[in-house]
Image: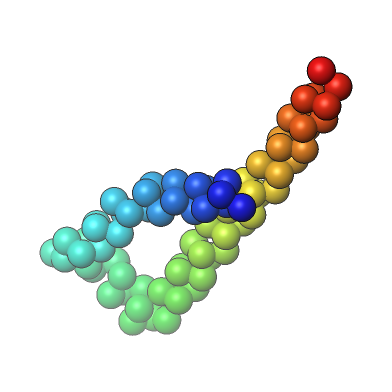
Length: 77
């Protein structure tokens, strides 16, 4: 379970700086306003959430598989 928390922490650390870009305002706020006005903002957010959840799930499963392989190697050595 600590490996899942580690993956989530890495994900949060890599996404944290990107969240600051939305707080800048000015020219960067034009695109979100346009997407929100035509109703596509929620679609974009949903796609981003699905992609990040997919990556987190993939990394979690990969970590479990590698842990199992490491345990098998340790048992045979």
